[in-house]
Picture 1 (cartoon, rainbow, N blue to C red):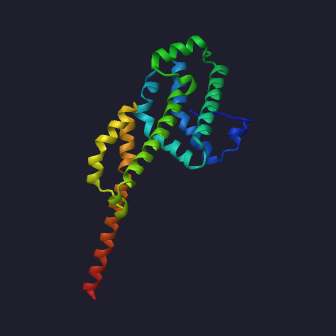
Picture 2: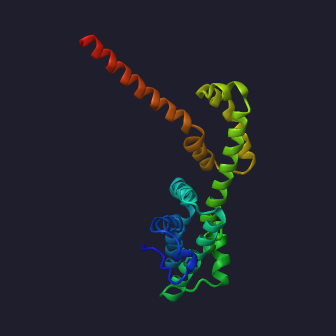
Picture 3: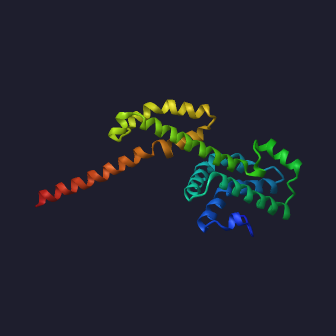
Length: 216
């Protein structure tokens, strides 16, 4: 489905083209799923129920990019709600049934969250900010170890030993398995993976030099 049309909204108009593309991409999965759900007279809820499974990683990635572009969590939340208002207007102004209060309660009962207010998308934003908070705690924990800090290393073995404790803290804060897996793959292991790739490149360069010296 096409992007949500937004006109004469200073909050949206001041965004760069890249930022507009990102915020549209962030809300698109829930917006499209909501429209299909309304078009089917609240029968087709598969897309809404599978948002986390299919779109969590991509949505989290786009939110991260938008945060890195200089926009705050508060601004992103406000933009999500703005696009939500515009989407509801599109649905109510079209041939689809109006989303009245009765529909709203029925939708929540069927899918378990208030997609009329892009609740799933906003929940992704709040959870990502929580993950950043946990990252900070993890960095503080890592840097607090004098030996690791002085050597500038944090080995894969040390990470594996510490992971059960960190995973438990995530579970205690009601993070889902998908969110914990996302943090593990995209944040917890990331630095270790980068270091490995650098070592490989270094070894390749070193081996080439050896071959040249032998030929000479």
